[in-house]
Each structure stands twice: as C-alpha cells, then as structure tokens.
Length: 354
Image 1 (cartoon, rainbow, N blue to C red):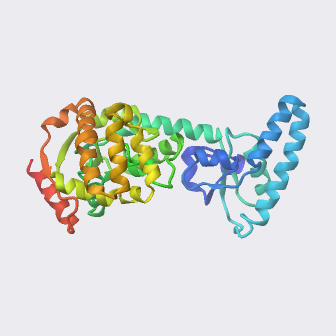
Image 2: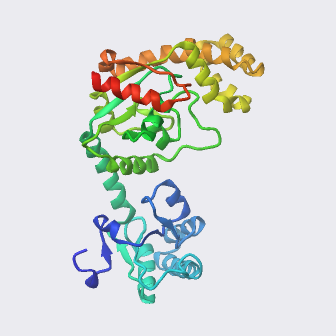
Image 3: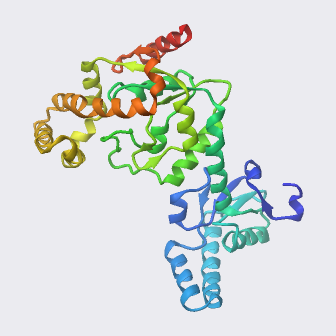
C-alpha cells in the first residue's frame, strides 16, 4: 500500500500485511473457492442473495438495493456481535467480495467506523481468480521435477509421502484433488474439491516450492477424478526426468488389499464402481468380481483387477503421456516395508548414482 491513510483499497500484493482476510460472499461462493486462510462472514446468505437478485430483475434496482441494504446491515451486526466481538483495537482485516463492490464496501465502511483498520480488496475474488490462473500458467515451469511412475499398486503415493517425511520436496497432486487417480480412486465419504478450489490450492503449493531443489511428483494423467491439472504443469511433467517404480505382483496385491480395504466395507458402492467397466471388460467379468466382493476374496479380486484392467490401461495411457520415462532408471520398491525411510534412502542414493 502506497498511502494507507489516504485509501481504503488494497491489492493482492498487500495480502501479508493483514491480521485477517474476510470473505463476505455467500457460503456457496466461499465453498467453491476462496483465498487460502480467509474467514467467511457473509453479508448475504445464499437465499438472501437469490432474493435480492430476483428483485433486481423483476421489481426494480431501487427496491432490490433497499432490501439488500437492510439484510446486509442485519448480517454485519450479527458478525460484530459474534465473529468479530473479540478483535483488538489494532485489528487490520482485508475484506473482499465477488469483484470489490458493495458487499465488501459495506463491511469495510462499518469496520472502519468502529475504528479498525479495514481495507477492501481491489477487484475482489475476480482479481484473485485471475492471479491464480496466471500463476498456474507460469509457476510450473520454474521447477525441476522428478516424475515417479509405476503400475497401479506400486505404492507411488506411499513413496511420495515417505520422501516428504524425509525432508524431500514433493508435489502431491492427488492429496490436493482428494482422489487417488484411478477407477477406484475416490475417497469414500470425502468429495473432491471444486476445480477452482483445486486450482487455488495447487497454485498456493507451487508458490511454496524452492526452485533450487528437485520436486518429486507422481506421473498423472490430465484428470484426477473430476478435476484437471493445468496445461503448463502437464507440459513440465512430460518433459521432466523420472524414475520407474517396479514392484512384484504379490507385493502389489498385498498393497492394494491394505490401501483399498475400505472399499470392501461398502460393497454396493464398490460394485457400482466396477460396473462402469462392463462395456470395456464384459458383463461376465464384472459379475465375477461382484461375487469376489461378496466372498470377501480381496486378494483374488485385486490380482484380477491388476491383470485385466489396471496394467493394460496404465501401459496405454502412460506410454502416450510420458514416452520419455520408458528409458528412465528402474527403482525396485517394497511398498509394504516397515522401514520406509530405508526405501527412500535407497532411491535417493540410486538417483545420485545415476
């Protein structure tokens, strides 16, 4: 801020100067995406915003503004009595709405009248979204990636987590997407983020990385469940060096039996996921897998899934997306090992030697 005393407007460059970031949009807008760390203090509820918008179109802008102002005043009063009640005199919040208009302007004015050093974000959420998209276009190219590839059941994510625990720098896109990136990758009872919130988290994580250190990341297709990776990141990963994780079949089956154990706790949902493969693999195969679920024969089930679905699908897609990894060094990994740090050290030593 060039002259805080002369203006109540702040920009995205000023984010770290504030005690709190307050998002005054509706809960639905906030849930779809928001600035990381922001607190939702809506000046209009979801229903109230619809009401005011409908009045604006069907009655008149004046009547809609009058009703909206009353609702905003009521909601600001509620936040003053609850959410903001214990804030100290020197509290310095940044307020934003959709585009830096009346909603954030109203909240900013009231907070400043009280004596707090409140500022309004120039351009609001739209400015933030624009910055996120710009970052996703430029940040991926700054880093040197080591792409970890391997067949399903190789424990690539477990290896990535072990690398992070050992102090290595990792980009865990599946954690951000809340999805394991395969047919059975959905996390039971946990929905994926919206595309916009995924973008925000990804841009935030990329900005935290150190360009001087390698970034370990899994080989992913463009889509992880319902969200997709930005083109700039995919381009960077396709051009990166990497390592091929190799695990024997028995260890892969044992790993999947452990990692996907919760699927058998919801057999009907599990069957529904497998049914999506009927056109590709045939009704007889899917019916057999349903029977294996009923019999709780998970070892046979996962072995057949690996042999008949996962491996053929992986070889088709990964060969097209990451052709350069065909010549990458092979790392023999033991995903069920008790000493995972030992596995990591073996990998790092091998990469140094290569």
